[in-house]
Image 1: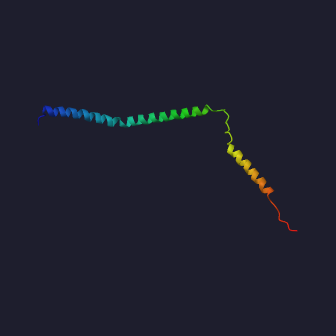
Image 2 (image 1 turned 90 degrees about the vertical axis):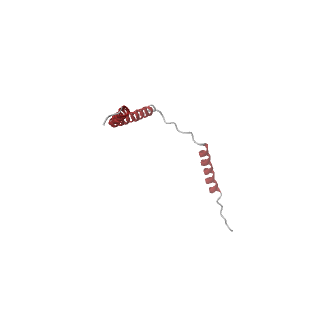
Length: 95
């Protein structure tokens, strides 16, 4: 069986593609490990920066929120209602 020139060209192209595929398959675990290492390093950097930002607030006082004006109004109205309940008690007395 003789090899024709066109067959030789096709075999050469196929062998190149097969070599690339085989190389990719051999390198796939290594590429996957590199990708995982890069992701882990990125997560670690993000965690470090988050911690450093948190340390920047160390020693600062916590500001209390301003009281809501509604809260004071509600307390005053409750006090008034309590006083009114005490004053409004009447006794019916027959003589």
